[in-house]
Image 1 (cartoon, rainbow, N blue to C red):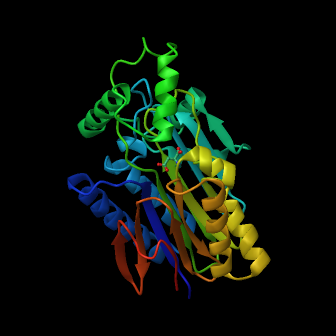
Image 2: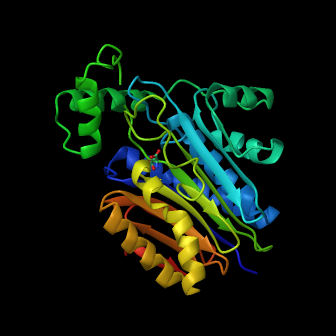
Amino acid sequence: MVRALILHGGAGAWRLGQLAEKASEVVKNCTERAWRVLSERNSALDAVTEAVVCMENSGYLNAGYGSTLNLLGERELDAGVAASTGLLGAVAGVKSTRNPILLARIVAEKTPHVLLVGENADKLALLYGLPPLPPPPVHVVERYRETLRKLLNEEISDSYYKAIHRFIQEGVYSKLVGSVLGVYDTVGAVALDDSNVLATATSTGGVTLKLPGRVGDTPIHGAGFYADSSVACSATGIGEYIIRTMPCLRLSLEYNKYRDASRALSSVVEYVNRVAGLNTMGFIAVDRDGKILYAYNTEAMLIGYVYENEVRVNLKPEPKVNIIE
Ligand code: ASP
C-alpha cells in the first residue's frame, strides 16, 4: 500500500513573524485533513481538493479568501486540478468565487471544457451553489497599501515591481490606482492513492499588484500544475517564468527519459535555474512509486507532508532540492 501527500503554501521571501507562523499552522492543519481524506476515501483527487479548499479558506495564504490584490485592489483568482485518470479543469480571472479549486473541478467533471475565465466562470460557480468570496481580510488590504506605497516611492528593487512601476508611470493606470496589497503565496497539493491515481490541485490570487487581466501559470496545465501516470506536480513562484520553463511538464518528460526521479529532478532544476534564474520558483511533486519530490530556488517555500504517518511542516526545507522516500 503506497500513499503519498505533499502540500505547499507558496515559494518566495517569506518573512518570519506572526503571519508566517499562522500560515505554517494552516499548512499543518490542512495536511492533516487531506491525509485523513486520503486514508478514509482512498482518493488522491479528493485529498488534494480538500487540502486546497482548506488553504483557500484560511485567509493566511494567497488563494481564495486570503488572495493578494491586483493593481486596482481587486481579486482575480486562478486554479487548476488534474489527475492521472485524465481529469483536467482550470479557471482564471475569477472574481467572486471563494473556492476556485472547486470550480476548476466542476469544469473538469461537469463541462466538456478544460479552462473557463472571468465572470462567466463565476456564474457557473453560482449555478452550482459554490460560496461567494468574502471581502479580503484586513491584513491583506494593509499589505496591499504598504506594497503600493513602496512601489510608488521606488523602495522596491525587484525587477517585477520595477516593470509595474514603469507601467504606472506611463500614465495609463495612474488615475486608477487608489488603494492597494498582500503578498502571500499560491497553494498546491499533490497526492498518490492506493489505486495508483496521482492528483494535483493548485490555487492562487496571482502575484501582488499584477495588472488586471493578467493570468499566471496556475491554471495552465504543464506549467503551474500537471498530472499523468508518472508524476503529479504543483508549482509556485513568478508565473511568467513558470510558463516559460514548464517545470511540471518537464519533470514528467525527464522522469520518463531517465526512469529515475533523482536525475529527473536535478535536470529540471538545472534547466529552470539556467533559463529563469534564481529566486523565481518552486514546485512539489509525487511520483508513481510514492516518492515525494520538492525543489525551490527562492528564499523559502512552505511545505507540509506526511512521513511515516507523521505530519511535517517546514518553511525553509533543507536541502532545497530533495526526494523524500
Ligand atoms: N505562481 C503564481 C502566479 O504567478 C503566484 C505564486 O505562486 O505565488 O500567479
